[in-house]
Amino acid sequence: MTLRIYRGKDCVHHDVGHDHPESPDRIYAIDDQLLASGLDMICEHADARPVRREYLALAHDPYYVDSVFERAPKTGTIWLDDDTGMTPITLSAALYAAGAGCDAVDWVMEGDNRQAFCLVRPPGHHAEYDSAMGFCFFNNIAVAARYALQKYELSRVAIVDFDVHHGNGTENIIAGDQRIMMCSSFQHPFYPHSGSPVSASNILSVPLAAGATGDVFREKVAYWFQALENFQPQLILISAGFDAHAEDPMAHIRLKEDDYKWVSAKLREVADHCCHGRIVSTLEGGYNLSALGRSVVAHLRGLNGESEMTTQVQGQTA
Image (cartoon, rainbow, N blue to C red):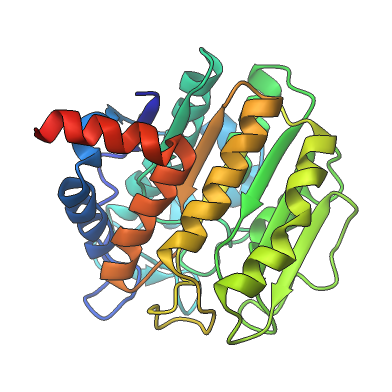
């Protein structure tokens, strides 16, 4: 088994209220499905470390990073925007969430045929260079990308974002950085009302109309895989949001678990051809708890190979 799940110690403790959709229950729901599927037993598990402050500055304005530290409350909840609240534990959770991506990069780069999934929150892909937004404080995937480029002297890293909401923060940070190719699908027009037209030549965007099904999604994103093969990434990073699922209340795309498994397996094929199977995926959105858990299981099966994982699960449970 080459799939490792990274967790952050305080990621389940960030909680701005029972009526907020980005809640600790998201991680608990995923854990329930990992146990029920048997994947929990055959995946490796690792505890992330908090990200070092200088790594955040690879993707964010240092003054913005300082401001997040300074605004972190001692008691109660403060709001950085209408959706993005901080409690006394939030800063720690955000540091672990970003740190998980860096730790996962280290692990996959130390060997071949390694895939990692960062089961962390708060999410990151709406956080821009100098601002928090949409439940996000630090852009976990952009930090991981810039960290990989710097530490391992890579020339080409790919980011794939299939969250239903456009990863405006990621695009804001990496637009024009020709070392990074970003492939992004999202409902449009929809929050955050960005992504089309694209802002730079290193961005491949697939805006989807409300009501789009899995067949439409597969047809629209099919060109990604040849584009990625042509780019020859040395590492693939995934912003894995599952709120495009048909059961999710936050949007209007009609994907199913098999669609997440399909796109994940296609990305694994590209990784096998281009970068020795090295993939780091990190959790973004997904707010129907049952659909979220099932979709993460499908995603992990796609990343690691359904037949291999099925065989191992059966061996563990016989």
